[in-house]
Amino acid sequence: MSHSTPATANGNDSKKFKGDRSPCSPSRVIHIRKIPNDVTEADVISLGVPFGKVTNLLMLKSKSQAFLEMASEEAAITMMNYYTPITPHLRSQPVYIQYSNHRELKTDNLPNQSRAQAALQAVNTVQSGGLTLTAGPGSDSLLLSGQSSVLRIIVENLFYPVTLEVLHQIFSKFGTVLKIITFTKNNQFQALLQYADPMNAHHAKVALDGQNIYNACCTLRIEFSKLTSLNVKYNNDKSRDFTRLDLPTGDGQPSLDATMAAAFGAPGIISSPYAGAAGFAPAIGFPQAGLSVSSVPGSLGPLALTTSAITGRMAIPGLTAIPGHSVLLISNLNPDVILPHALFILFGVYGDVHRVKILFNKKENALVQMADATQAQLAMSHLNGQRLHGRVLRITLSKHQSVQLPREGHEDQGLTKDYTNSPLHRFKKPGSKNFQNIFPPSATLHLSNIPPSISDDDLKRLFASTGCSVKAFKFFQKDRKMALIQLGSVEEAIAALIDLHNHDLGDNHHLRVSFSKSMI
Image 1 (tube, helix red, strand yellow):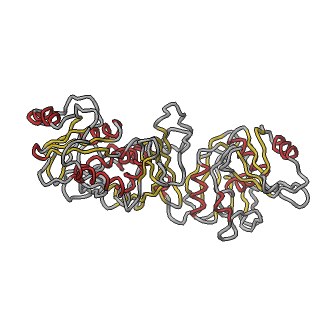
Image 2 (cartoon, one colour):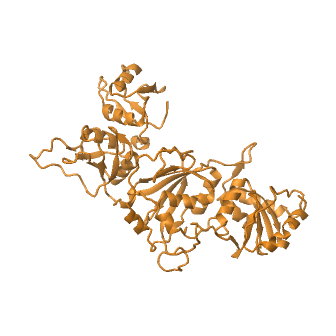
Image 3 (cartoon, helix red, strand yellow):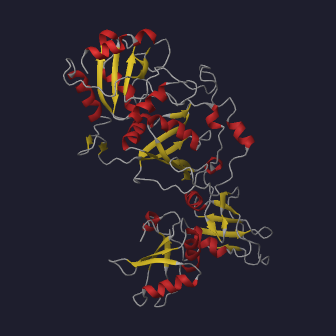
C-alpha cells in the first residue's frame, strides 16, 4: 500500500460520514475519522485494546484520520459491534469508525512510523503492571505468561440480583465469552467465566476489576482462575456453554418468580441512563449496551446496564442468604428410601453435619444443620441439582436457625438425628487437609484407608454389590492405601459414597470415600 492510497482512498470517505456506517464488509483494519489534533498514538490504540491485540497503526494527522489494525477480524467485529450503539470518544471528542477497505496495513516503508511502532510495543509489553506478553513461536496469538482464559468473579455488595445474562452482557465487550458458571460460595455470588482467548480475559480483568455494575453496589472482584477450561453440563440460569446450544437445561433451581423479577426490574433500580444524579442513575450511560469504555481501558464509570438485563430470569440462592444461616432445606427427596444417615454422609462431604431432620408429615423434605454458614453454602452449591435415589435434589437456605430435637419421650420414628459428636466428621481439625480436597460430585471416587489385605477385585465386588457398574479401578502407585474407582454415572457415585463411606474392611480399617477431581 503506497502512502497515497489510504489518503486518496479515504479522503472522500470523510465527506459522507454524516452518521452513516460504512457498508464495507468486515476487515481487521478499522478506519477512524475526525480525530482531534492533540490525540496521541496511545489514545487511538486504546480504542482497540479492550477487544484484542492491536497489531498496527497508521496516523494521518493532517487528515484527522487513523487506521487501526487488529490481530483478528473477530476482534475488529467485536469492536465495531461495541461502538455501533455508542460513539467512541478520544480526548472528549466524538470520532467515527468504520471497517476499512484495506485488509491489512503495510506500513514498513512509510515515514514517521517509529512512534506508532513504539506505542504499540509499549501497549503490548505493559498491558498491565509489567505483565509481559510474548508471542508464541510460529503463532501470532499472544501468550500471556501464566494467564488463564478463565476468570473467577466475585460480586460484592449484592443489593440487586446479578444474573448470568448481566455478566454475559458486560464481559462480552472484551471478547467472545464461551462459558459461564454461577454459584454461591461463602455467602457470596460468584462466577467462573471462560473467554476464547487469555488476552480477552486479561483485558476484562484490567478494565472491570473493582468496578460497580450498578451505582454504588454490586462491585466486581476479578482474578484469574486456576482452571484452564470449564465443563458446563447444563444450559440454564446458573450455567451456560455458548458453544453448545444442545445441552439440556437440567433441573436447576426454579427461578425467582415473576413478581420478584418485576420488582427487581422496576425503574427505580437503574433509572434512565440520562436521569442525572437522581436515584440510581448510572454515572455513565448509553442505550442498548452496559459498560462504557472511555478512552483509556481501565477507567470505567459504573457499568450502566439497561433494566431489560435485570428482568431476565434469576436464580440467586445467595440473595436470600442471611449471614450465619447454617440450616439447609432439602426438597424433592425420595420419601420411600430417604434416611437421616444418607443425608449425614452426603452433606458431610462438604462440611460437618450437626443435625438432620426428615419432616414427619412430608418426607420429601428435610432440614440439614451444618457446622457453619460457609459449609452450608458449600454443600448447597455442590449438591443442588444432583440426583439422589432417582430424584433431583433442591436445596435452599432454611429460615430456621437450628434443627430442634424431639422432646424426651416424643420419638419421631428416628427421623431426627443429632450427629454433633459423630466421629465421622471430616472437618473437625482446623486446617485439615480435607478442606483442600472438596470437589463437586463426580463419577470417579477417591478411596483411602484401604488395608493391605484387600485386592482391587475385592473393592470392585464391594462397589458392584451396591448396584453400581464399575468402569475402571486403579491403586495409587505411591500409596496402595488409596485408589480411584470410576462408576457408571455421578448418580451411582453419590449412592455408592453414601453406602460405603466408613464401610468396615476388616483389620480395623474403615473405608474413606470422597469425590475425585481426577479421571482414571
